[in-house]
Length: 270
Image (cartoon, rainbow, N blue to C red):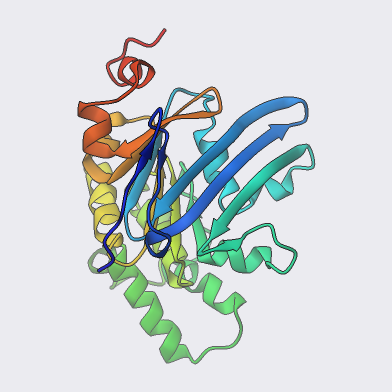
């Protein structure tokens, strides 16, 4: 296993993981919606096979940054950006990068479960079929693997042809995760994945996040600081489009270097 070398630069907003431990690198990245700045000169590295959480007040830019990691902003003509984002050393905005392939490699799960109006099986197989013809036995195997990986197989194995909409909210969210896993991503982006779920379903999703990091890099946006503390290895605190502090999660929550960070996590921010 690769040992992560960390150095911190003042005032604490950058952790410099060794290149062979880095999955995503954001450097000098800024983004605007028309004349409105959303992100300003962000620099951070996201370590491979770890869970990194983005926290901060509403409107601070954390979901904007998450979406930038697989170029979802390409769909918005008002968006302009500067700086670089690299996936495994490659600039994701380079002309030779196919956006569809980037989004396969960097999957996204949104706040509200969004299963397709088809069967449980067909939801998971959907992305596989887009990639071209594949023997049915191979599709069956991947569907089962993805459902097992998302801790859903035992709950649905006897009703794979039932509508995905017949599942509970928590099951639907795990199905969406299975659908994303089926196409073999390297990174999984999670935008408030449990905010619409009940406490029991939330715990299942959190357990799933912890289990997946053995094979994936995960980036989590959450308003729930207790959730960030429970599941993430590293946490980045954003405010007003800036990266304020980035540290191992235990350190950031128990011994933040900056008063702005401490005020936010203790609820004293105005």
